[in-house]
Length: 255
Length: 108
Image 1 (cartoon, each protein chain N blue to C red):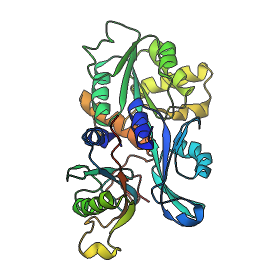
Image 2: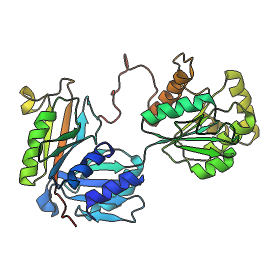
Image 3: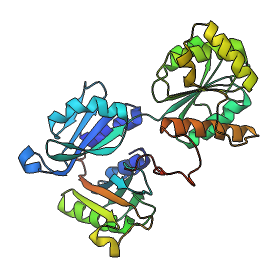
Image 4: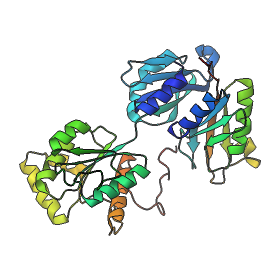
């Protein structure tokens, strides 16, 4: 199979991989050519192509960083392109905000999952934008979802018996965002409950609650926008303020 | 890659020669993220984008050369570039674009 075909297969199949292409530098000294390419699957179990094999050792860290950029390697300029499945959002609580969140997350190209133990609520009719609906309690749903560093978790149910196990479970994963809806009063109650449940104080700072940016959101779609805006900012390592007056780069990928 | 996947497959199915242009670096400001792709076919079709439309026609010309020669090349656009008088980015950014050929595969 050609490298290009394998890349396409990885994109379609939602696999994680690094594609390393020599784009310049002293190619003669390195015994390679401009355009030489290497495909390295996450885990290093599969390497394909005519690019310098010494790049394979770098691949795992590059995949983890998930950033397209040029690196210098043994006198060569190498473009690193990461193939990765889209981020996922897992929403706990099949409430109406869940549908708004899923609809908007799909616009971002994310994969959407809704979990709720109540089969009456967790239906495709109520949640047409959910790619996946899991009718289960949070522990079981989390075991199915297997959240990774590209997963956002949003807890919406307003019901302690769903919310608490979902948050505690989420804290046990690598997920990049944990959002919890609820009034400030309920956030404080939840905080006490989580501490009682043995969650360490410093772990609690991972929870965004009340979740969302301060947009003055009123309707369900506005609330969804506020929550997703916060998740996007956190994923990019940004604060989520206004661009006007901010000093940093507008786009996160720009050097 | 995802954005232009279907286009690549369609062009390949027709047995066309293709060049793929990829934004490999951007500095200061950038209309499209690093990794964005433009696909150009031998017969002149264009899919995807590498800027807000500022440099696409020059990339297209370069892509046709790459298709003809079979040799990949790196082109740069921006204020500091020699070409800035003709092809530049109004946002004041600089971008490097790598253009590589994709040979048609033998039909089986």
